[in-house]
Amino acid sequence: MDNKIYVFGHQRPDTDSITSAITYAYLKNQIDKENEYIPFRLGNLNPESEFVLKYFNIKKPELLEHVYIQVKDAMMKNVITSNIEATIYEIGNKMIEKHIKSIPIVDDNNILKGLVTEREIARYFLNEIQNFSLEENPPKVKDVIKTMNGKLIVGDENKKLKGCPIIGAMTSEEVTRYVKKNDVLITGNRKDVQKIAIEKEVSCLIITGNFLPDEEIIELAKKKKVPIVVSPHPTYVTGRLLRLSTHAERIMEKNPLTTHPEEILKDFEEELMQDKKGIATVVNENGKIEGIITRHDLIKPKTKKVILVDHSEKSQTVEGIEEAEILEIVDHHRLGGLETGLPITAHIRPVGCTNTIIWDLYKKNNVIPPNEIAGLMISAILSDTMMLKSPTTTSEDKKVVEEISEFFNIDYYNYGIEMYKAKTNLEGYTEKEILTIDLKETRLSRGLIAVSQIEVIDPTNILNKKEKIIQEMEKIAKERNYVLFLFLLTDVLNEGSYIFSAGQYKLAEKVFKTNFEEKIVFLKRVVSRKKQIMPLILRNI
Image (tube, rainbow, N blue to C red):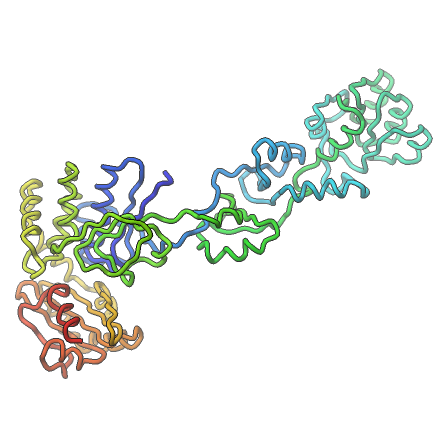
């Protein structure tokens, strides 16, 4: 199915971002059978998300690196090709029959070997006045028979023809002087010329006009092992068809312009525009043909269609979003300034979790999800609302948790504790990995600000290496030009957060009205980045 629609969350995915892509793609596939909705992720999974997917036995979404228009989005598929053993006559007829101007030449394994266009065929005929020899790419007798619709009177059909084609329209004395061994002689019903040709041991004798040789000529040809082919055409046409019985390799361009289906189209446009033929063969890493792309295909290439979940900010989304067609946004955050070319469907509500909105859409469309999809939804809500304790929690979130718990018989509290324990298992994670598991950037007039957050049941392990955490924060802030970098280590059970500060820590003092000389403070009842931290930042910086 070519109607693929990409569904994905933000660049540093949390559990809501990952599961929203999966649960919304599942819903769309149930209500829209014309398209295929595929969930993707834009980054690595955090420990909690890994636990949730494993718990409900759901496959991890594939990583989506960009949505730029690629060669595969613009190329023509189902390419008509010809085998390298095909004759020029066969190739020309195929081009006329299929109304195409070029044909890639492949071997038996569909590996690209060359390209034949109308240009090569025209040049081939323009060179007709020059000396023509079959030595370079000799056809077999059977190729000649097939091209001329002729018949073999005597000889080996697999014999390769050599030498030059000679039209025996001259006197027998002149034929004797012109014809050499291994040439191909074309003549009509002239026994004297036929006999001279066989005695000269031509590689093939072609008799035109459907005239059959007599027994003496046949016996002599058998003795000399010279094939005789009878052509139904007149001599002139037969001569032209002999030239067309040679193989594609004789005229094909052996090193045509090629590209890979995954190549970004704008990176390849200039090379294609400058190519004399304006055509490129699209081959995969094994050299097999997957398509053809021409200059004409650059006019209006097919854009990728996408649905954004759990975000709407350009800084948080996938690379190349400006080249994609955004169909929908499903989110519970503020609008982030993305522009769309056409009106879109937007499900944006001030609730604690994107999956709260998605559950409502399931109900409105009368779709009952399977247990594992419902499990992903309740996991996301518990994660985003800190077990329904966060200030971001709404009555809708609580209602959805109750409905899912009752309908699917899930003990959400005990499951949530188990999930949060997995979230706090950061064994083996570097300080940088801990800080970037859930990091969001915001650009203000003063510059770029980043706020990272981890919610844990027991903050002891991370607090034990607070000096290393702060050092890594300072390093990241410098590398990424953050004027302020905050890290919230949120204690779920104690309902508060340890706030680490890097960059211009005086800005943190201005935001929280407290001393940050030690670069870390604990604030009771501060647990929400969206509802508590970001409003303070926007108000005070």
